[in-house]
Image (cartoon, rainbow, N blue to C red; front, side, top):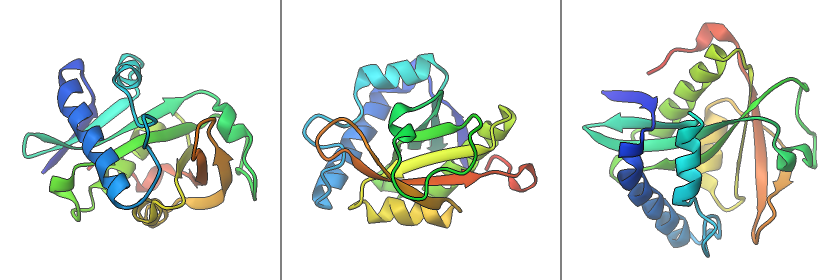
Length: 178
């Protein structure tokens, strides 16, 4: 059984190993996402933890998956091209999603996204946004399988910063933490 919770400082070493694994996985897939020093950094993860925005899914005593649920207006998301976002109220952005290779194929990204949706609803937020690199087909499939709709493209200010952007508008009746 999995346990979803906020990340603690004590998780940092294990989590950074997981991110290194994710960076290597993306490289092996031929994706430039998170490459050349542009992947999640320890100071960024520490800030996510300090802000109460980092979460982990623990299975068999190990961190199986992680993501940040970031509040506030994201300037990169404001510059979306394409259909654009639905609504203009507050939203949360899901960033730095990673799943351990030891738990691949167990649909943990779906459980992680579902748990983050519950957190958003507990905060009174019904608008979730997420992005991924074009070559990250697996993540695109996971995002769309979780009910997120493609809304256009956003570009982060670093090499290979182009991302496909997705949104999900939540309703309270269908969510519970796994």
